Length: 194
Length: 431
Image (cartoon, rainbow over all chains, first blue to last red; front, side, top):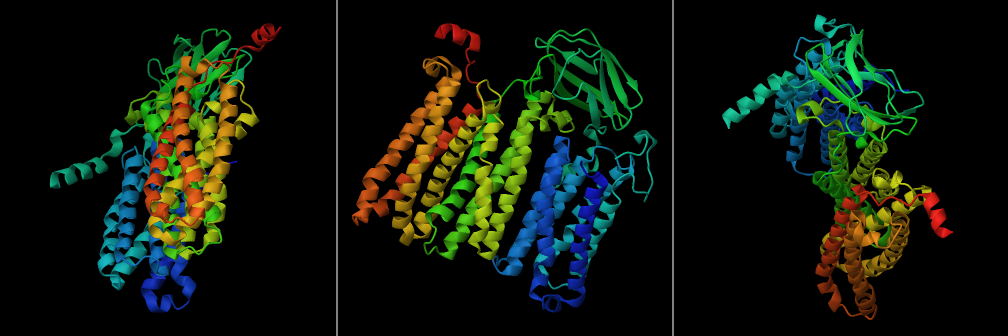
């Protein structure tokens, strides 16, 4: 028996929310305090990497068209890449801060995949609206991790990065049609469906 | 530059030029089933309302004759009457217009009192192309690199003082192999699905892949994708934490999945195939991947990264290679005997000719390996270090021959062996 698509979305939205909360905590208390417990430094990069690994089953088992397969596959890869690079940096295996460019790359790839894989216009249905919104938000929000590469201690940028990730999480929670957040937008879409 | 950026942004802003939205939930008859009575109706159930076009549903026999009558919509279903069908195999090609005016399409097969063919063999599918061969070759190469790099570290270098830097490089090589395997798997599945669906690329992107996922190729793709994602994760952890222990499960997984490629090809469905041929295929591919991949990793990384380990690694690899070559040959000979009923099939059949090229290349690789085993290894045992400085390029050369063998193997996996003689005819002949 396959779980409902909503459950899969909510599972990943929860994971992304946890990543965002960890980042927000780190931004508020500062890197030194956050990393006082050694395991904490691995928390959000490890979570991001794990979410990337977990996206592979979604890609292989729950998508039924090529474009959805490519979109979910690209999310799995960039999450593994960015989470893995961050883990490498906090563990000391990687030295160059330029590895943090994997985050803006992940945002841009993710946003583009969201937009391209949504075949309907913005107001067709709530999921279409949110896919477009998620896509464009990801692309614009890529500025935060991009600037953080050169200004890693900026509290404003760190907070913005964390809030952006939490925003994605909220949008992902609301992404499926049966979740009554904005309602069903287009009569063209027929009865609410997944 | 600015213009290109504007075009890209515009393209992202108006992605609605792409197609479908409705999703096919189920069909009657079901994908790939054998029905005892010819169906009078073809029924497609969608998750939402759709419209039909002229020729929305086609039921095609082996020569392309269409038996479907005009389709109509019943709620969220598309229904088409079907003229009486005789015993045989049939391909259903369908298309429908989503509520958003985008076209969704798909294909599946069924058989009337005979087993349904795989959707890859649907009427209109062209069969493997050059692009498929190349992608499968890259798939083989990625897998060989992953298995070989892991095997070198765990089997050949076990117990030796391996420099940390070399350990990390080997993990990177194995990770690269796993990543290439993942990408090539996706490309191979896409090409196979595109061939079955017979749609232009923009419509293929939204075509229904469910029947493809239900094929052996689809199952192999799913299992290998999940498996190699895990391999990648394990290898990453080994690299990050400098723990060789994580390479163990990665190696077992990668080696265990080596059979997926052959199961996705002709081997699993040809007459004469059995669990024994599947096992032999797995042994053949697994041993060849380990041999070629470990050789490549040794030549490219160990020879330059750890000169102090050259002698020990070479001697140990030479022993391992002897076992691997034995397995490759035994399994290969058995499979050739099963698949080619007559010796003359080797030069008279296309499959036999490809096999002949492969045998030639394998002989070249074996001769090269024999030189290493019978000439270089005894010299090293005698303490002649001169060979060690010159042998690196020779190892690379042998690796390149192995890479060529994998290319021919990629073509061979997609080729169809000659038909087996019918059992009755065999019995008559034997009498």
